[in-house]
Length: 362
Image (cartoon, rainbow, N blue to C red; front, side):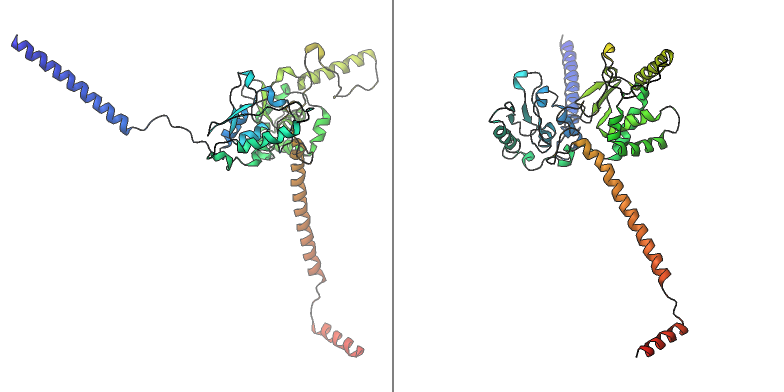
């Protein structure tokens, strides 16, 4: 029995010490091994975090009031100061925002625009956007750059979005000719770049013009299949809800054949006929009006200029600047040629002639 007790104690010591050693090793590893979960530092120069905050303003209550681009109550301006929507599921908390740093809550409700206190309430709520943070909250003095709230005029970004959408080909929504004409100069610039990139015949001119207009108006390929979305991925549209390029071309061909068979020689309605696809429940896509009312493409500045007009004019400004540079360069070269051609060659005979002329005058 004594030997059995000794053997039991031996096993107990062995198991205890082994478990203790393993526990010590695990504790040491947990001390020296860095934690896998690291909190992300949020700062005002993080553009992706800014767009993520804007993405939270998907509730329809933010579309009830049309405000100018300078209004602090627009979702993009609220996100610039660190505000996000608190809870989209609870409808009784519409227009309630929360600061991502100081966790302060703001209710930014507004009365009807016909109310006598509407203007006063807008001014009061705008002041709370910057002054509603806690005392030492960094968003009071360090908001995101104001340029992030404006429509993008980066040609390379537009070309990249156009290239991402062009594989949709004729399934893209049909855009009316007058809309393309409004943005004609920018469309020509992007189409020229697309012609260089896509030299095959898979994409016709109409497809390239369509993706150019969509890119200029702030649309891009959506994360879901056969969808488009705005730059903040708040407004999503399915291509199946609109008249496509292919369907419109088929419709035009059907009308043409029907008129030929009936002997009708009158001019047709044109490719931009206002006739709707009512039987199929489809409508024509407007790349400007389909945006939410607070999207930078739609909102107007103090001068009454819409965002899409700023994008259009940016192409004209670039062309004017380049034209002026070319004109100045040509003028400078012309002046140099004139000076070199008008310069006289100095010879002894010419000097003598000048001297004689001076003596005659004397």
